[in-house]
Structure formats: structure tokens, C-alpha cells
Image 1 (cartoon, rainbow, N blue to C red):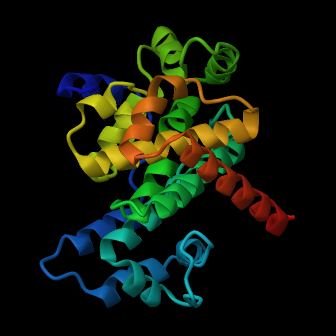
Image 2 (image 1 turned 120 degrees about the vertical axis):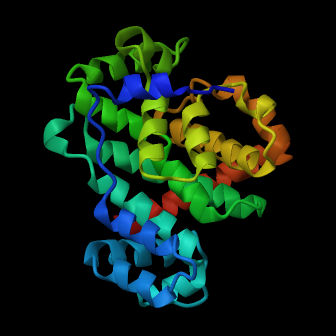
Amino acid sequence: MIDLDDKVLADVKHGFNLPPKPALISELQAALATADPDLNDIASIIAHDVSTAAAVLKIINSPLYGLARTVTDVKQAVVFLGLDSISKLVTGFLLKQTFDQRKCCISLERFWDNASDIADSIMVIGNKLKSRVPIENLHLLGLFHDAGIAAMAVNYPDYMETLIAANKDYDKLLVEHEEEKYETNHAIIGYFLAASWNLPQSICQMILCHHDPEFLVSCKDEEQKLAFSALKMAENFVHINKRFVAAPDWHLMKADVLKVLNLDEDDYQDIKEDLDEYFLELDGVSN
């Protein structure tokens, strides 16, 4: 399993521009860190930011949660999800707002659309498997796991060329192209970003290792293994849906992923069909 020492993190931080943790997240984390967090205080902090509150309600009322009734205000959302889970939803939403398209050499709209598709897919998979991983953790992991790509696209004006080269080279992963050109990669940058935002260490570690085929073999935490496996399956399904070919690292991890999730090939195909149907319905609603 990949591990980073303080020197590596210091080298990444030196001269690398990462978006600072938003004030709203700092405020939420401070409120949650008190001896007895108050539900009303948490709801008030979120509700004060209208766009964030609206985004949280939109996610909770989506088909992914399958609620019998509509949640109409932030306090209800906090009651339904719990304090920690609502904080993760807010963090995922604010992540998208921190990168400036004017400073970025890739299309952030396209990037976040893809991240959102993976986040939705990982939640569908989590619901299908009835795993022990809270779906808010899965959603945050789905959104955040490739955030290092956006950060690199802000810091390196030629990063689009690297992405294009990697997309044409199916035998070499994007992280390998990045290492050759920049002596770092988006998984390391994403880890540093997640850690600087005080995300749970388990999520930070999965971000760091999400292209490491040895992760599932070496990881001892069952919840992490389930979440990681759901992520890799979601990545692969979205990649197939958009590019009609499996994700470049899927063949390295497929056997271990299916073993962790206790699925056979027929189960895998059933989930793929369910996700295909989900995105067709989503397209129909958006159109």
C-alpha cells in the first residue's frame, strides 16, 4: 500500500497551489468538534449559505436516497442523515466551487460531470450491495477521488496534453504519465488536498491509493475495502458508459474487487444493467 512521509508532502506543498478549505467547512468542523454538537447550530450554519443548502436538499431528495417523502429544509436533512454525514455532503458540494475555470486548462464542467456520475454510481452500487459503508462516505469519495486532476490542471498549463497522451495510451496509467512529466501524480495531490480539508484519514488513504492494484490485498479494514471496491467498479462503469471500453486499471483489480464485494460475473452484469438504466432515466429527466 502507498504511504507518504512528511518530506513528500512538504515537497508537494512547496510551490503547488491548492484551494484552501472553505470557511463554511471550517465552521462546520469546529461545531462538530465540540463536546455536544447542537443540531440547530449545524443546520443554521448550512442554511446560511443558500446555494449549499439547496444542493444538500437536492442530493437528499434524489432517487439515490429513495425517500418516501420530500425533505424540505436543512434541519430535516440533518435529522435524517446525522451530523457527520451532512458535513460530508456539504464538503462534496463545496469542492466543486473551489476551482476557478479561468485558471484551469481543462473543462471543469466536464470534469465535475464525470465526478458526479462516479459519485452517483458508487452510491447506487452501495445501495445494491447494502454494504456497511455509509452512502455519504461513498458519495464524498466518488467526488473527491480525482480532485487532484483539477488541481494539476490549475498548476500545469500543459496538463491537457498529458491527459490526451494518457487517453491514447491504454498500456500506461495516467498516474504514470504524470510521474514522468511532473514527478508527482493526481492521487498524491488529491491526498494532500483531502488531508488539508481534514477529511477522514480512511478517505484520504483511498484517494492516495485509488490506482494501486495492491491496495485491496494489503488493506485490513473491511469498510475501506468495500468502499474502495465500490469506487473502482463505479469508475469502470462510467468509463464504459462514456468511452465504450473498460477503465485502464480495471483488469488489474477486477478479480479482487468482485471477491471483496462477493459478486460473480452475473452479479456484476446485473449491477451494470441497473446503472445503465439509472443514467438513461437521468438523461430523460434532464432532457
